[in-house]
Length: 292
Length: 259
Image 1 (cartoon, rainbow over the protein chains, first blue to last red):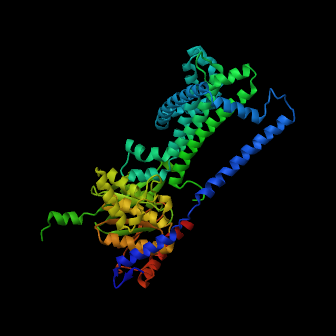
Image 2 (image 1 turned 45 degrees about the vertical axis):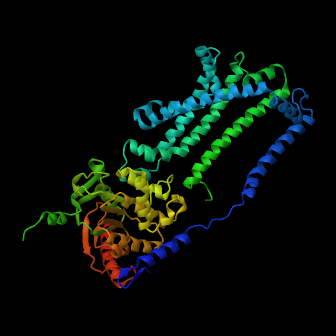
Image 3 (image 1 turned 180 degrees about the horizontal axis):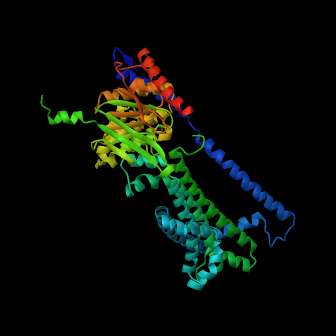
């Protein structure tokens, strides 16, 4: 006890608190980096192996002729050839530029709309459910209108990409603002934050995880809309991934078609992985992950 | 004898609660949370409010903190800064312990970042958390989080500290140590403390005065001056005897609601 001889002994109290603090905290367990990477990697590798094996078995069963469903080996060979072509990288560059432009616009629109809807009550009543409705609308359904409005052009593609992605981003922000813990709002007010300062210091940081989830979902929608758009809106001298996919179908070039699909899938997975990294980082910092 | 201005200032209470009533809603459905509560807390005094559920203690603290306004009556803190601590630390999980304290300084108007940093370090030192500045709230124990919250409340440069069952969720050992810590901080500053608890022993351990509130609506039922010399121990016979007396009264009050 830190009380002795009629006064609080500050040194004793400090030692007792320090002792209790040390007991309360977990000891740092040294994690083996290699083991952690391996445990994350082997299930993925096994899954890929199983998928490729199933594919190969299907080919061997002669369910479809080889020129329609080629073997994994042939598709990988085709992918290798593609990766050696300059033209292929031009196509990837054009597709990714469209994806980034469209996504950036969607982030801007989604954030502005989300922030205003979260803050202004009549606006929420007016368009709140409309945003969710837009989210469920298949993006390909927008293309006839987009082509009427913008003809076969870059703008038609961008229009649909933005419409596909912005609602998810707006909804993520709205959900985040709605679910700020009331206790944190109260704490912020007690500290003297109100109005914009409450937004900047409490509401926005508190809604960040939900906003990032919206950004991630928005990317998935943007990428899907873009692929749909590139299949429909084919522009001269703009060799995009989608356009090449369409040509491969027209030429019945099954290996090229499947190789391009793998490229689309891999780009989607890589970007999703980036979002997961950001999301995991935010959650770990806030102690929101299970098992920490 | 003539009174100087200084005497008048010291005579005016730090918290003046005058016949305050607070109702939520209107008409017959209105809930009366507080009914004509009057309470003066002198500057530098440590007052503990005890009461059963529904005595409106959180409402009362909100009124004193200026987060809400009374239906009737007045609350006067003479323009003093008030800090408020909750049962949960309510730290911002996206900031480190140090940054939580720095944010309080920033919102108080401390402009220079360097100044904020050094003041925050000093405040954490005062609650014996020198090494925890870079830790995030989830990495700290409940007791440590409450001490960061205490440092944050002190960062507001509050003259009046309102505490809403701040140690209610802690284990007994940690709570005892935090009682020592709070008493030490209070006795070395001119802080006025209004401390809400349902733990009568805690009230007897800490308070200069214990004010007993009735429930539904909250009214002041009794007031006890605690003249047990400090520093006190929660296990001491005097604290236990006073706690028993207050508990008896509290039970009498609670019994009235059974009928």
